Length: 322
Image 1 (cartoon, rainbow, N blue to C red):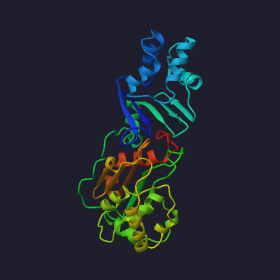
Image 2 (cartoon, rainbow, N blue to C red):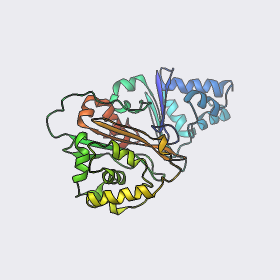
Image 3 (tube, rainbow, N blue to C red):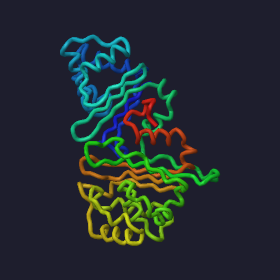
Image 4 (cartoon, one colour):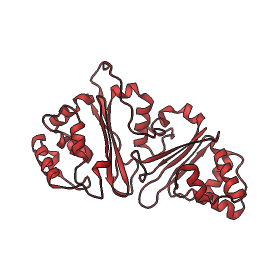
């Protein structure tokens, strides 16, 4: 079996499309496309791609269209496929091809749109890369109740957000050392130094944690109604009492911007994982917030590692990514 994943902000709560393909290798899928589109012309390239991959994939049709236009023979090896892709595929970023995968980074002048073909061999060899990449439904699994390990622990904040065309991996994961998720609400209330280095979303989250909140769920619910994450609000970076009062005034007096629909947001707050797919734009759809601690990561090692890679590097199979 082989797989296709499209990181597209236009689609679904997780902003990606995942397809399981019947072909044993990536090369087999492209050869099947050659037979359908180029060989006997039963399909136009766009229609075949939409049928196979569940919708359009930006620029992918150009390979098959140019192959039919120029009478190009189907590739017989991954090296031949690589050369054909380099010469005839339309993309605006990077192209990486090997025996087990094709990875493309492109954009449509609005947002970045990476996509990936890969096979079972790569899935077996790189579970730390594919676990979140292949996860296609909401929500991520909670951690079973278990005694926490020794030590102070840590919490990761993975914010898959964007506000311009630099829309993939621009915001690296943020770490709260020495605190686990059950204690994060209290930690946010007590924290003042270093706030200028925090992502704006975490500043809003901190400001919207109420004095009585024992967990992040209520504050995440308030974040869903925050009017604009693009506006600069330095008042929320001060002491928590003043920041909270200011943030609640903003919340009472504002309306979400950019065609957002808070009713379409998905939110789930567990003991060691808090997650929100927040509807952020009438056109671009959802963005994802994940906050998880070392307890959840220890029980979901591949999924946690894959999610951190997904937030850090457009190509999770890059051996140099961390």
